[in-house]
Length: 190
Image (tube, rainbow, N blue to C red; front, side, top):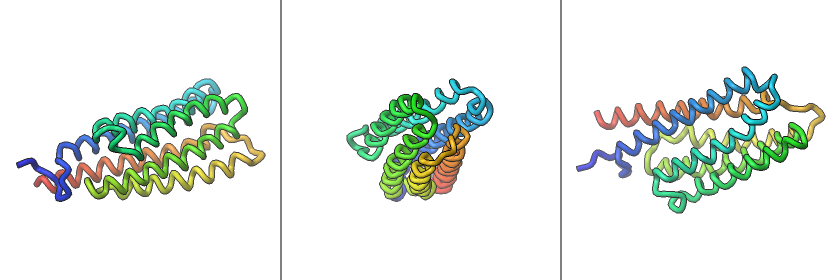
C-alpha cells in the first residue's frame, strides 16, 4: 500500500512540493539580496532583475504544474504562467517609460498572480494540507499589487528597492511552506 496523506496525495509528491517551495524561497531570497546589493546602484542589473522576477515565476509555475498533472489539470497555475510571462514582457516595455510604469505593471501582475496563487493554495489544501502560508501569500500579493498601482501614480520615482520587500515576503512564505510541509510529512510518516 502506498503511504499517503489522509486526502490521498502520496507522501513522495508532498516531499517534491516541499522541495519546490524551498527552491522558490531560496531563489526569491537571492533576488532580494541581488536587488539590495547591486540593483539599487546599477540600472542595467536592476532592469534585468525586474524582468527576470515575473519570468522566473512563470517558469516555476509551469514546472510545478507539470509535476501535478500539467497545465490543463491546474488552470490557476496555467493562468499564472500566462500572466507572469505577460508581466515580464510588459516590465521590459515599461522600463522605457520609467520606474513608475514598471511599478504599475508589477502591481497588476501581483494582483493577478496573487489571486492565482490563492486559488492554487486553496485547491492544494484539500489534497496536501499545510497551505495556509501559500494562501496568505496569495492574499498579501493581491493587496501589495493594489498598493503598487496606487503608489505608481505618485510623484516619487520608485526603485527596485521598493519591489524588494514584496519578493522578501514571497521568499518567507515559500520557505515557511517548505518547512511546514516537511514537518507535516515527517510527522505523518512516523
